[in-house]
Length: 175
Figure: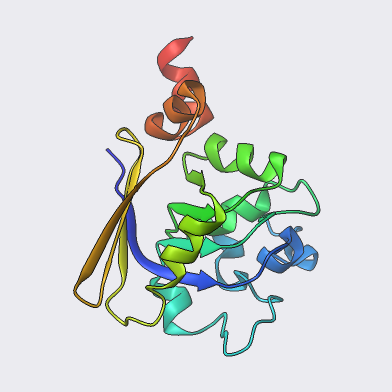
């Protein structure tokens, strides 16, 4: 079974769009793997380096509201997939982006603002990690000698998609 979680990349902004996740100029690439070096290339945040170690080591992204807005391109979740990012935790997601995450076997977890703020309180600890238990519907953040577990909701169908590894694997088991 796939492991969800690991090092956390904090992107402290709302409305991060799909063109910032993977710029449109790379949509002509032939394979998902070809997208890998361009993850978050056009995202502008103070102190953020898309080529830096924090981005390369990230397995979970924590962000604010309306994550994945803009174009409905499936390439945005694909670039996370090929960079081993297994979960995005945000206040809300653009509907199509969220479903594309589930369809690709990745977790898109919505939490209320106060819980996102709590997760951001761990951003300053260099040892921060997050474990995501999709089956148990919890995220556990650890860092700075502290730990917090938060429950989240996910529909039974979307949970089944994620646990199966995505739509194709789910369909193979059901049809």
